[in-house]
Length: 215
Image (cartoon, rainbow, N blue to C red; front, side, top):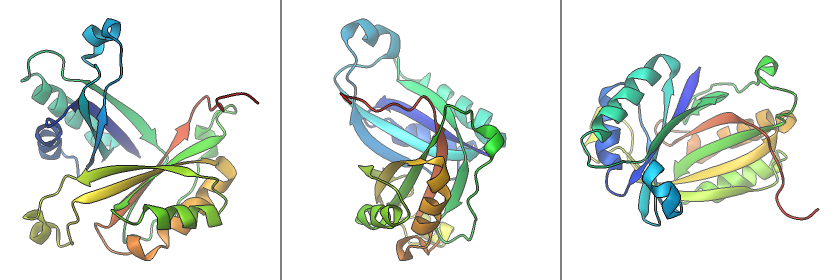
């Protein structure tokens, strides 16, 4: 099994914490720009405000989670004040571009009140719409696209043996449990995910799902 580790830190600190995570066993990651929105009453607790942030997403094996988390914590200890937040989420599946992995859901891991899967697709910039079209063809309703960047540098291309594309897009889709496998399978077949290093797909159980607004 795998864990999605999420670190939210001030702008320009993600590269340093990713390097620490990589040395501790993280195989790769995606950095997404954002901004804090917490009021001043919460700022002292979380170190958040209306300021620029970066979000590091990295999927690691369960066996590496502890080492990676501690490496990130230790790196953030070098900064003055609170550096942000760190948390982990169980993933239901993890598929790398170019692989033939099959997606399946474990019914025993799904409480009755959790009927949706959060499907996350990270692809090279320009391909999120293709992924969404494939997902819709398999029954997905819609999704949200985030811009981001990969953590690999040009010098890593030779080491990994894959083409490095620094600009990324992340597509987040909520799909009913009974359609999730078909959605993942449809996206996995795309040409843009046929090469190693071209992207990843990972899922997590969405808990306490609610629609917002008036009925």
